[in-house]
Structures are given as structure tokens and as C-alpha cells.
Amino acid sequence: MPASVPPVPASPASASPVPASPVPASPVSVLVVGSGPTGLTLACDLARRSVDVRIIDRSPGFPRSSRAKGPNPRSLEVLADLGVADRVLAAGSAPLPMRKYRDGVPVADADPAASLRPTPDAPYAHGHLIAQWRLEEILRERLAEFGVRVELGAEAVGLSEADGLVTVALADGRSIGARYVVGCDGAHSRVRKLIGVPFEGTTTPEQAMVCGDVEVEGLDRGIWHQWFDEDGAVMLCPIPGTRAGWWFQAGPERDAAGAPVPPSLESFRRLFAKHARLPAGRLTGATLLSSYRVNERLAGRYRVGRVLLAGDAAHVHSIAGGLGMNTGIQDAFNLGWKLALVADGGADPRLLDTYEEERLPVAARTLDLTAERLRATLEAIRRPGGGLDTAITGETAGLGVGYPWSSLAGAGSTPRLRSGDRAPDAPCRDTATGRPVRLFDAFAGPHFTLLGFGPGTADALRAAEAAYGPVVRAYGVDAGAVRDLTDDADHARTVYGIPPAPASPGTLVLIRPDNHVALIAPADAAHEVTAYLDGLTGAPAPR
Image (cartoon, rainbow, N blue to C red):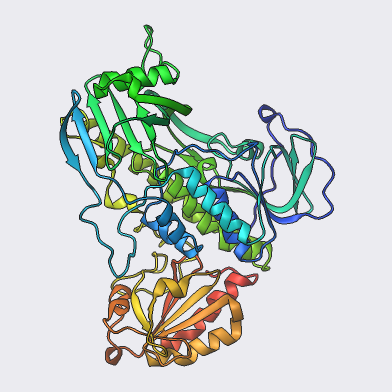
């Protein structure tokens, strides 16, 4: 990890900051700015770790826009760990088949999720369709269960750092003090501007789109309808949980000079009639209208002193593949446990540098992936039968994202797994009770998990729990341990690349709180686990 972190610079003049008020009497450990999916995921993760967290948002009320289409398989794993996946699944729907039209006539149907099935190591075969406002509502409900609520109408306009404290000035004259601040406040992030972090990249005006929530009569709500013509397109996706709500996306109308026409009910009706060849009057309402241009931008840094960035505040890219909200949720899951250890656990603040080390390369790769998927999709829709299914690939599921390059990636590997990789799931059985237990059930919660494969690991498992208490939860896999799992079908050994018990004296696998592999060690090298955890929770770095 880097040896030092520079202080927060003076706010740039372009941000027009309001001078900070005197430091409040009772600063919090973490202040989250922005209550979209990224900020809410982070706040939930911190709150369940008993971190003193506040979350604010400049908006006077909670938005009702559908916007993002829903979590991908990796984000569903994150939401399951937070205890809300069942609510999300109940409130939304499986991905819908896509019907492509040309000249108003159906030419092809596609169902990218039809052939996908859960596997022992990945319980969510595909993403889930849910309106963003409903997902945010579920996350706010979960946050409230920890006693934390979003504070609306709180606009951050100034920021200063001194004496181990960040003071955030609000537009109404109040101020909030915090040991750490995380900007989850979107692509136009005020926090990012206040700390002077560049947001470099490109905007492509010709790749524009108009969007909104609309009501449409007489369309099959079991289909995502996509009308593509040589001179434009209209796409209508039904919004789960609504009677007549649809998410409208289209290439904009353009005026005589070629400039996009601002979105409106009238322009939506004209586009609908032109491309769907259906009566304009069947589109009966349009709200939450917005325009979209393809932006590809990446923050130059994710951390400046005690201030960090996450989600769209740190990266924006093409919507192809649906990775915007998902990348933000996964940013938050990476950051939460590290911030908790530093803010309230006494860990070395340099641990926070691994957040940028791990997530910035993922964002850079996401920019490349979404740009490539956008090019492929634009090419596909020029042909009859092409559609948005082109944007969906195995990579957009998020299950292959790992951090093998990270300084937190400890020693060890197996034929199937490296340190830094996503830790796979597997169905097992509780040895004592016989009830089914998945590895993800063992991982869920704000702790490290130490897996011990084989009876040779039992002593190391007992010692780890005794030494680290609630920080580490130890599970044996056919180990004869206190908390033991039986791997009847060898699913766990297979996905972790562990040989059958007679061929191996035992293997220890330490799983991080964000469910990535920290290290892999033989049973007789339990000291490697101890050294790693001591380095992470104390002053020294693990590597």
C-alpha cells in the first residue's frame, strides 16, 4: 500500500463552495452523500457493522424513475448478503423476452435468459428486472431496520478536512462532521468537484436517447418491445409492480438544424406512432422525462485523504449491458468492510487505498466492455431481427470480476481458484442437523469466513475463532469441526479445486467480507492466516 495519503486540496473555485460552519459537536464515523443504489448499499453495509453512519441527499423527495433495469447476478449476490435479495426478487420479474420489429412488423423474438440455469457455484442464473425506485425503496427499508434513515433536502456545498475530521457544509447553513465522507452523488458529483478530482473522458452527442416512464394501452406486458428502423428506434419495457407503466427509450426527434428535440409527451407520441406504427393516443402519459448522451468518463482518483468516491461519481459509461448501477453496488460492497475496519476498527488507513487499487481497474474495463457492447448493438439493430440482446454477454453478469492483482491477494491457489477471485457458492449439508446449507449462507454477514477442507484443518478453525471472535467465522468442510458442513456431492471441493480428503491433508481458504478469496494455505500453514488477519486489522499491511 502507498506509504502516505495527501490531504484534501482546497476546493476549486469552479465549485463555488460555501465556507464550512464550525465543526459539529458529535461527528459521525462515515457520512454518505447520495442515496441512490450505491449510497444505500454502502450505508446498509456500514450500519450492519454497527458503524455510526449518516446518509444525506440533496433531493427534497425520493425519485420514482425506473431508470436502471435491475441487478445482475453478482449484484444479486451482494443483495443476498445484505439480506434483501428475496424482497428484490418478489418485487420484480425475471428478464423478459425481447420482440424485435421492423417497419412495425414483428420479425424476431429473443430470450437471452431462457437457457440460463443456476449452477452449484452461482445461485442466480441471470439478472432481475426491477424499477430503480423500487430497489431503492427496499434498500431504504433495510437501512431503517438498522436505525438509519436518509436525510433529504441536505445539499453538500462545501468541504474541508482538518485534524482527522471532514466537515461538510450544507446549503441551508448546517454542517456535518465525519471521520470519512463517501461521495455517491452521481455523475455530476459535487463531492468529486469539491476535492478537485478530474473526470476525464468523452461525450458522444450523436449517440443520444430520450427516456421516461410512460403509460401505454394495449401492449403485451410479458414482452420487451423493440421497434428498429433505418432512421430511429423506440423501446418499451414494462415496469414490474405497475398496472400500465412502461420504461420508454428512443432515439430523439431532431429539429431542422439536426439538434435533438427535448423529450415531451408530444414528442414521445410522435416517435411511438412513427416507429411502432400504432395510434399515438395509446401512449397516454409521460413523466420523469430525461435525455441521455453516451458519456465515458473515469475519475482520476477514488480517494483523496478522508474523502472517497463510488458509483457514478467515480465512473460513467454506456448503458449497453446494464452495468452502471451494478458497478456502483459492487463498488460499495468492496468499500464497506474496509471503511468499517478503518473508521471503527483501528485498521491502518492505507487499507482504503486498496479500494481504488481494486475497483478503478474494474471500472476502466467496464468502460471498454460497455463501449464494445454498444458498438455491437448499434451494428446489430441495423439488421432485421437485431436488438438489445446483443448487449448481454457472460461478462455482463459480473461473476468473473476478481482482484488477483491486488496487494490484498494473499498467497496460494488451486487448479480452480486464485487469491483475489470471487469465492464460489456450493450446496452442502449441516453435519450436525442434516439441513441444507449453502456456502453463501456461511459467508453472509460482516465477517471473514475461514473454510477448512478436510479433518486436518479442525484445530486451525478452532484457533481462528478463539483468536478473532466475531471478526472470523470458521466452517469445516468434512473436517469434523465445531461448525461443520458435509460436502455430499463434492460440489464445494470441485468449485474450490480441492482434492478429495485422502489426497490432501487439508486446505484453508480465507474469504473476505465481500466474498472474495483472501488467501489459500495448507492446513499446516495456519500461521499464514494469522499473519494476514493481523496485518489487515492492525498497523502493518498484509503484503
